[in-house]
Length: 75
Image (tube, rainbow, N blue to C red):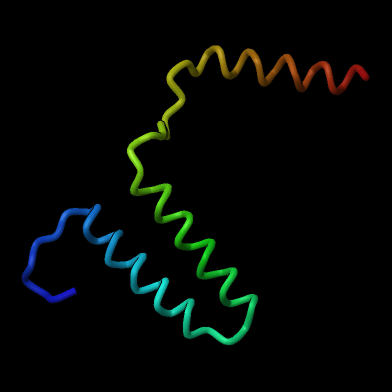
């Protein structure tokens, strides 16, 4: 990316994914390729608009979580 140009976060992520994909093609070690692929997957997830990072119903989640934990202890 060139300095002084304003890019949206989506454009930045797309550019970064293409850079990582290029680096992945150049990598010799399979472990490195897997690592690049994982980073690309995470950036793709961050770019998508289909997820909700916030828990909308915190009380419901807490109640469900605490019930499950208490059931585990009694078993």
